[in-house]
Image (cartoon, rainbow, N blue to C red):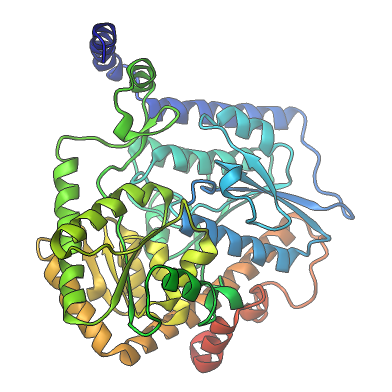
Length: 510
């Protein structure tokens, strides 16, 4: 870096510290989004927007976090779309979805129009939402500040703009957790009147403390799969054999992340420094957004990766297994490669890495379902492995995995990323699960059966909400609450059909 660049960086840093006290970029984004919702409401009161008319397709906009090669976000959205198409009928509906990068969602979401959303989204949402008959917020981490308050601002903005015009507004299968006070205030003001279906009671409790009525549902990834994804000789065998698997050893999957560089926050001043000097490259997310970079972040990451690697190496030395690393989001590559290097230093072996920036959701889920054990810090790696009844351990930084393991009846298999005994717990729980795989499968399959039924119930809620807004919409007979929840699921792959047959009592009315 030259002297000129150094001087620019120093000057910018001084300006940054001065300006930060006067401007919180997250709050500025929330204020801008709220002002646009208020403006749309005022416009609608003066000149109401046209409503859906019988005979035309119902146009719905899905707002979420796709296009970053986050496998979980892509899978849950894929299945949401399949369910909506099943319920609405392709001839009666037109679906569009927001994507961060269309090149990374190419080939996903059949029949759905993809719209690239800019990083600074308020005016984009303001222009787009008015063109649709309703909005569906489809992000899993829908109402929380852990990852990015800006993402929740986007969900609230999309729902709020729809509500401002008395349109269908649905939050579908999302999670709620700890939030900044300003974000809670925004939810209280703009989400009221939407149909919010959470994926667990804990999330409903968070929102109901804010005065938001909710219904409890589940995640929407439970129905994902296909013969190619799930068949023993399908995608997974090709990929794993190419990586050196002999076709016999039990496959053990580990999914590392970087747990400590969240939340992502907009920082225009830091963006100026980055653009001028290249500084902050390691924490730059995209556009004006940057990862958390407190002084202790690196120390915590080293500790987590060391404990995770230690436990997995001990497990692999105790059993003749084929260990592989799976990066569930493109952002995970850095943590996965550092984990891989840590293992190499200890064992002088290279564990294969499958990352979502090189492998699509079908390939990664296929590998997860071929495993005999999954150890994951990614929520959806656990969910996506469960239809194949794969035993799993969660290593978590927030409530999502804790809630999942509680639902499954195995809360002891939710470990914390900063647990000083993480390595020993991974080894001990992992060996116990490998030694009693059949016993571990039962609770997992029963949980899948319950969640499939819950996803069907969500579909019935969706039908009734749309029907209340548009009584003349031509839903086929037998849909809506009071009817069979399983009739509201999209066509199911063989794995899920077998689970429902085997655990009929878990998927029948209580």
